[in-house]
Length: 279
Image (tube, rainbow, N blue to C red; front, side, top):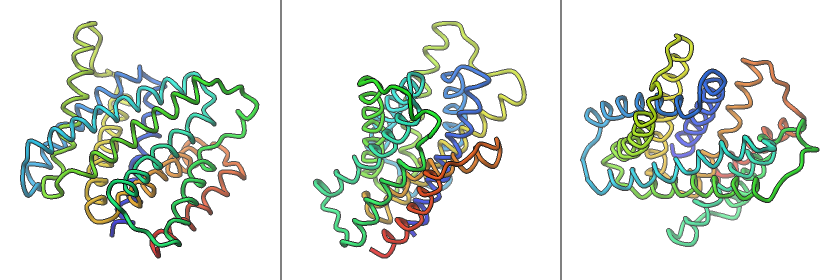
């Protein structure tokens, strides 16, 4: 069940990234994030009131901490993607976001995996890089700052996974409420202070924001349930296969070409998931 939920998380993360990319072409990325986080806050609060078995202030606080790490990671990721090359920034961020919880689970939580399971973890990390890689930017120069920002972004996302993985399962999805409360408050304060419009006005942009809010927030909530039912190491690594969903949607919706390297990454990801499940 943990593997299945982790794959669902990856699909939701990847879909959210794809929608976010479309939204960023029509509006400022912070406007897209603010709208999405406000929508997510309303939805996840309603879900918590209906489904959560318990409520703990500690989990709300941990959720806010996770939201802060995730927000920092997202800011650094978009900054790194803007400086590029994307073909280096994206895979470095994804691999690091998977490696941080894996190291934490092994060193701190004493997660135990079989040798076959660890082979799957390593193969999954390789698959993340292959699927994210872009041949078109292979000749672009990579600065130390771009590499550093990609690694820091991955650490931010990885720490978000770690913190969410240590919340009480019975309180899910309240921790996500804490995360969205923090990020939405920070973003909204900035928009009010600068007098900028909070929501886009055209219908297409509004739909993109609604979709982004749905998939982004739901992916975090599903991750909570996955982490409760399996190893943090396994759940984090499998969830970090999200670039697969993004690449598939880009190919199916936008007609973007998939390189041989990316195709190899898909095969590696499928094999890695099977090895992790068996191990």
